[in-house]
Length: 94
Image 1 (cartoon, rainbow, N blue to C red):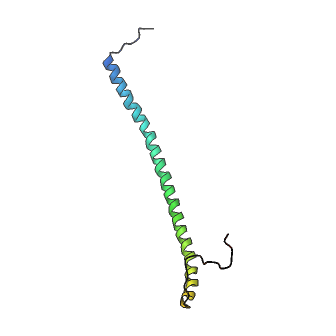
Image 2 (tube, rainbow, N blue to C red):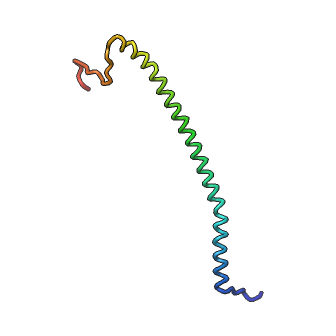
Image 3 (spheres, rainbow, N blue to C red):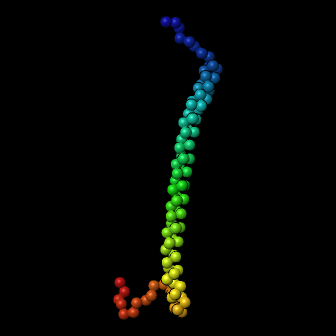
């Protein structure tokens, strides 16, 4: 075998800097893939939350309609509907 190669410090510094740039270039595609994965997860969650919001609005609408229909004849008869719980007379408090 021959003698080991000896590189000057300047060449070692240049090769070290080049190696760091190569490492960054190799690592970045992995980072980009992670960013894309996270963006896809966020989009899927956003879609799920949007559907859930639409469902909640539909349920609220379906509950309000019958209540409005029941409230109308009572209002027309001249009764007032209180939003507070009525007090019970003669019943012990629990």
